[in-house]
Length: 149
Image (cartoon, rainbow, N blue to C red; front, side):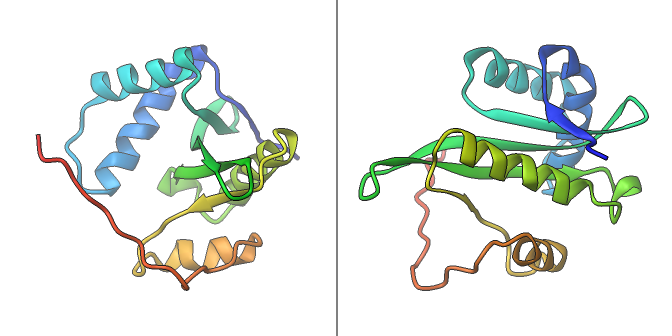
């Protein structure tokens, strides 16, 4: 049974709470109003695609994807930037359903793939992603430049 769907503006309140939990997981300060504003902008400006997982009319997880482009392939890529399922609902298949939404988005937009990054210490993610068909791409170096404002 499919428990996932595209997020709507009506999901904003519950989605912001989940997004806040996600940020706390990554050691950021809780800020639900800012989370709500951030997500509202993404939805209204169509900057990202957000899918939610539901259990008995309650949002329990989400995935957020951002569009990128491959110049060499001359096609869109999707960056799976955020994936989160509330800890009380883990191990029940919600993450895999959300990843399937990401793959379907890739197919429906004729994109060339879905990219993601996860920490080497993320044992759950490093088991989950290969089980969903993702391949570890370790032949490149990943660099980041950060603007400290």
